[in-house]
Image (cartoon, rainbow, N blue to C red; front, side, top):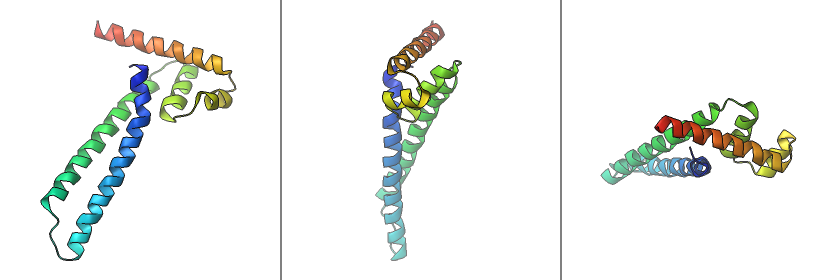
Length: 125
């Protein structure tokens, strides 16, 4: 897993939240149609289905990435990754919470990232 993929966790969270909000609005429109005795347009149901599939796909991608982070054996490295990618904290927040220097957080991160890349390369080969 690359650093860019890990950074994508932030965007996945945003996509999931946005999709859930859109789905709630779609379902509200469907409910409104039913409440006034009208059948909801077919397009709304199709849109509902597509949004639900998107949410499931985004959620599955997020879970896969979080599972990869959970597999990091070194506790310090795992905590830095969890704080950075799952909790979306800044490097300064991570350093402060873990009582490390900013530089040490970067070193821990770089070490863990190189291990993940080595595991990924060996799995492909």
